[in-house]
Image (tube, rainbow, N blue to C red):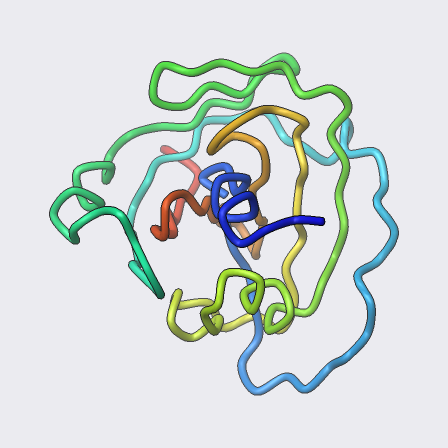
Length: 152
């Protein structure tokens, strides 16, 4: 069973996509291998959202803006931590249901999409899971949602 704390910790710059006003009650899709879906690239933290309970202040959370998450050659690196996912998997869920696990709404995080693709990496800590939405990643850690976009 995934606890609130585990789920918060799992979102790897845990990155997001969720929908407004969706009343979908469908179950999450089956997990599928993500090896081809995880695109290599560099993503930069462009914004943060504190929602629900957080162990950080707004200033502490905003200090992450500008940091990068690197997905390259089967590894993920963020803030000096590197992990080789084994094996990553992907699932799609309604945004409302996904964020309810963090006791927030998609709107509190600034997500407008109705669904989110969750990538579970098998890594520990903040690199354990992230959400993909449009061309953005959302990583959740200690009550802060980090929004990352592809770096130029």
